[in-house]
Image (cartoon, rainbow, N blue to C red; front, top):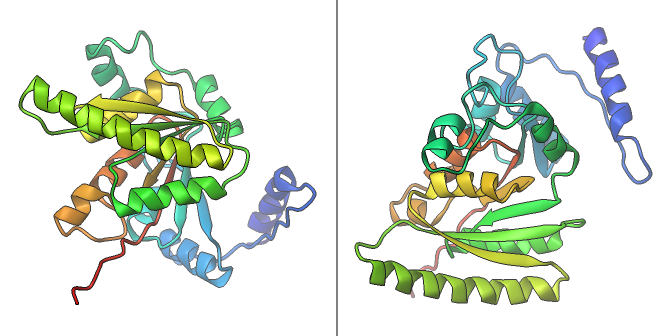
Length: 262
C-alpha cells in the first residue's frame, strides 16, 4: 500500500497547477477493482471517472480491459475512457478491416497519433446526435465545458429503403442540427453538422477517424435504447462505441426524463 501511495504521489505532480487540488488515495480492492473505484467515487463525490482503456492485461488484443469494461457497465459516474495506443488490428469496428474496406484507411493509426489525442482531448469533439432527450442533455453539458476548440455534430440515418426516403431524412436532420449549432453559437462554440448513413456505431467510429477528432462525447443511452425499453447504465450504441473507437470517449450518464400521463 505504501509503495502504491508513493507512485500515486509521483503521478499527482502531473496534475499540480493553480486551482487544481489533487488528493491521493490507495485502497485495498479485495479483487473487485471496479467496485473499489465506484466506492471511492461515491465517497469523494466525484463527478467524473477517468480510466485507461486497458491495464496490464496479458490479453493485449482486447480493445477495452476488464476493469474499464466493468466500470462502463456498472458505474454511476460520467466516464472518460482514455486511449494511449490501440492493440494491433483494433479501431473503428476493426480499424484495419472496416475502414480499409470502405476506402477510408491507408494505414493503421500510429501510437504517436493517439498520444496527441490524450494531450489535447478538447481540440475537436465529435458529438453523435439522435435527437433524443439524453442526446439533447449532452448538448447542455457541452455548453458548460471550457476550452473546446471545435465541435462536430453527427446524426446517423440507419433506416430508409429508398434514396428519396434517405434524402428526406438527411434534410430533416440537417435542419435540426443547424438549430443546435445556432444554440451552441450563443455560448461561443463553433460546430459543424454531419449526417451519415448506415450502421450507427460504424458511422460514429469511422467519422471520428476521417474527421480526426480528439474526443467522442456520447450519452450513455440513446433513442434506440429508449424505444426498446433498454434503460440501464449503458446502452448498446454507447457501449459499442466505447469498445470500438480508436480515441478517447466520454460517456455521459444521462438519465432520461419520462412524462407521466395525467
